[in-house]
Length: 222
Image 1: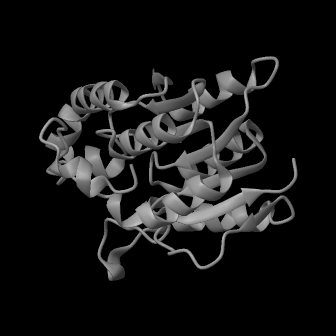
Image 2: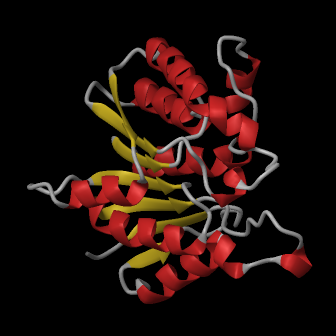
C-alpha cells in the first residue's frame, strides 16, 4: 500500500485523526530505496503509521519482517493538560490501535510480526539495550512524547538500536501546541532534535529534498 487515503476510506479501520498521510511520499521513497525489514516505532497512538508500515512490509517483504511499537497510551503533557484537546481521544487510542493493527495484519499476504510494548519509552529502550546480542532495527520512527527532554532521551537510547545504514525518522520537527508568543522550547521536539543532530553529526547524514515536518536521517557510523 502506498497511500493511507485508501486506508481512511476503508470503513474497517477506526481512525479519528490523520497526522500521517502528509508524510507518505517521503516514506514510500524510503521504503523503496532502503527496503527496511525490522522497524521500531516510538509512539503509536491509533496505529495509522503502524498500519501503513504493516501493509508495506506485508506487500514487499518475504516472511520475517517485524514492527515493534512502544507507547504508554497515556500521552504527553499536551494530552494531560486539563481540558486538553486530545485528552478524550487518548483515552480510546489504545483500543483503536489494537483494532486497526489486527485489520492490517489480516490484510497482508506475507507474515509480519507485530510486537506491542505498553511501557514508558525510556524503560523499554533501556531493556532493549540490556539484551545480548543487541537487537538492531533497520528503521526507527520517533514520535512519542513531544517534550524536549523526552525526545532527546528517546533519540540517544534508540540510536544504538539502529543498524549502520539504517534510517532514523523524527516526527513533528517544527511542532508546538502553544501560540508563537507563548511557546516553551522545552515543550517542543525541535530543540532536542537539533541537539541530537549537532552532537551526532559525524554518525549521521541527512536525506535531502524531503519535507521538514519530519526529519529523515541515515546512520553512517556507530
